[in-house]
Image 1 (cartoon, helix red, strand yellow):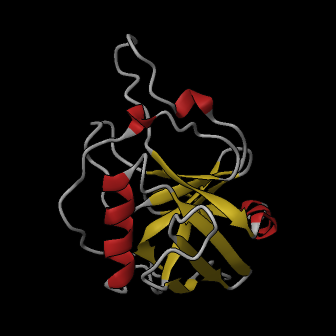
Image 2 (tube, rainbow, N blue to C red):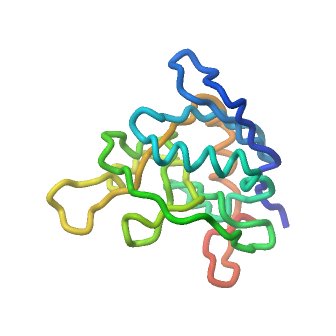
Amino acid sequence: MKQLVFLAAVWAGQAVFAAEMPVVTLTTNLGAIDIELNDEKAPISVQNFLDYLDSGFYNETIFHRVVKGFVIQGGGLTKTMFEKPTKAPIKNEATNGLSNLRGTLGMARESDPDTATSQFYINTVDNVRLDYQEGVPGKYGYAVFGRVIAGMDVVVKIENVATHTQGDYENVPD
């Protein structure tokens, strides 16, 4: 059984992209994904992500949910499907004007809007239905906080792996 494991996540501790936004590299067993983080529009989500990254939390976690034509999600479970203990949830920043478009990173959360912790997803298609919808009850949205700037081919490889149900988890990579 193959698992998609983050072998390493690299953060240099300084901006490394022309736009002066932080860039991280997620290294998986299928290749590297470079992500630019928008700390101007999503400062809480970006700082939360970087705090988890700096602590080594993401090392050896997997993309545990892979839904073709939707998202790949990771950042909280190990290859044995053990859910790592997290810090307190953060405030939802879905009203920041960033949209859940193909290649963007968003904070995964439970049904309550302010429940995001360590898990994130990468949109594999435009998912504007995940955006905040003003005046629509219950449409709090999912906060976008970054975008893939290199390695979208790796995201597509991950999106296309076979999946199965494992216990309470659906869409687990084979």
